[in-house]
Length: 251
Image 1 (cartoon, rainbow, N blue to C red):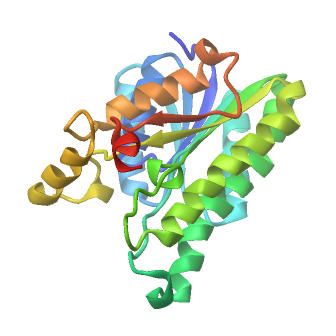
Image 2 (cartoon, helix red, strand yellow; image 1 turned 90 degrees about the vertical axis):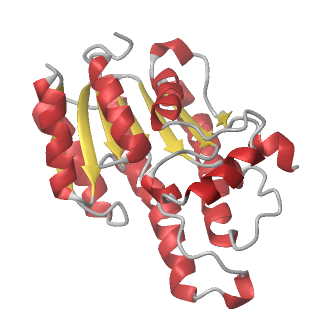
């Protein structure tokens, strides 16, 4: 029970890595506060967790809105008495095109969803963690934010994911004395809805990895569990790569 009686926010929780993490965290004893845009899927996930004797609540909303970031923290306090950790996992890839051809709206949407939302999350989550006397905050970045590997059309996504690494490093420095840790998780190709269902594309992506396959959402969630639990008590400011070796093959 690595998260026993800990209260954890999980965003992007309606599917993929976020949903897998929510189920895993609850099984490890956490009170999970789930956020995403798709209310029906969130409700189904909460029901699934409660049916398995877990503890979960949810509120639907858009992580681009600061009020939603505040609402998730308030829900954690109201239902479970405070906040101990957060897995800020929600994000989008956006349209892929070279920068000179990219629509300005796409740039702003990707940065707002992937990076500005993390600022809002930290702004409201960290004071709540300070009230508890400690905490762990985690952002889902990407190997693309670490080494793009020459992938075309990924400028907005890469910039947003690289920004998360810098944000976590700054937070780790600013709040280490508060016993609050901040890290980023850098997955490789993962079989989620964002990756689509094109088997030919999946085979190509799998071949880019040293392990010659894509990750399951549960494999990435397992790394998130480590980074949010006391098992990683001396890990902060880290950009933890869990990418099946894709970044080492692309450099």
